[in-house]
Image (cartoon, rainbow, N blue to C red; front, side, top):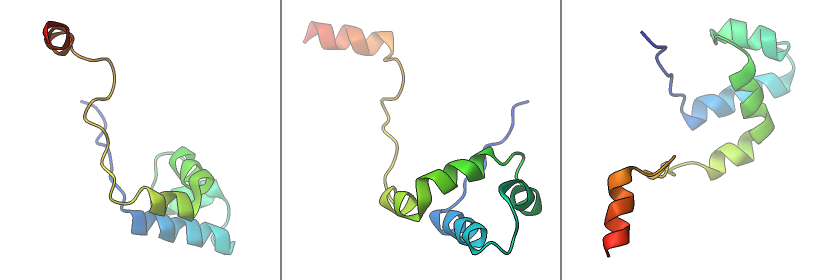
Amino acid sequence: MGKKKNFYSVESKINVIERYNSGDEGGVKFLSKKLGFRSPNMLTQWFKIGIAGLESKRGKTPSPMRGRPKKNMILLKKKY
């Protein structure tokens, strides 16, 4: 069985970034253990993006056409 993907709201991500920036909580590893993350990599990505980057992504949904297109979609486009 695979791992369940966790979804974190923008507000919770901003809260974690602010806690890290305050300096009271310690480093990335300590904060990730304290908050119950499997690894500090996700938090590191959030810190690199920053609060402004997270807020700019707010409300945007991922594109449904991600990855390699399916073969039937290619055949439909060639016919028309």
